[in-house]
Image (tube, rainbow, N blue to C red; front, side):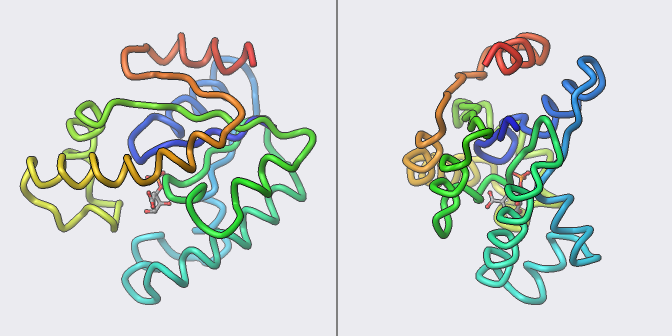
Length: 170
Ligand code: S3P
């Protein structure tokens, strides 16, 4: 199983869907898995139980997915690598390859400014410069965990077809 990780908006789900449509690979998303199991949205979980609770469930669901390995390609949530011992668990699995999709923070800001609604960590930031500052710092903190992935692809300037090809070649 190929595990795709990286910051919100880096294209984890897009490239996963692309690979499933064009290359006949099965694709799953940890956020979808959590929403199905909890029977409510991520936004709702953050709103009513808070982030610490969400991270506990996320960790449990990740462990279950790693045990079952039901997909060829599996996308994590943007924060998954940074909590508990999630990266250790992922990298300890023999049949799992972790891949970090790295994107420049300015590109992420442009993308995420129009896609904040379902993302509880940034949905209250209304000013674009504030969002850029937040992402710059947040990405700086998280990059340490993301880099524990076995592979890194800088996808800032890449089209989805090329990203898909690189992932397939790993
Ligand atoms: C989060 C990213 C989200 C989702 C949750 C928390 C994060 O996933 O798991 O809102 O901490 O970066 P995406 O990266 O798919 O947006």
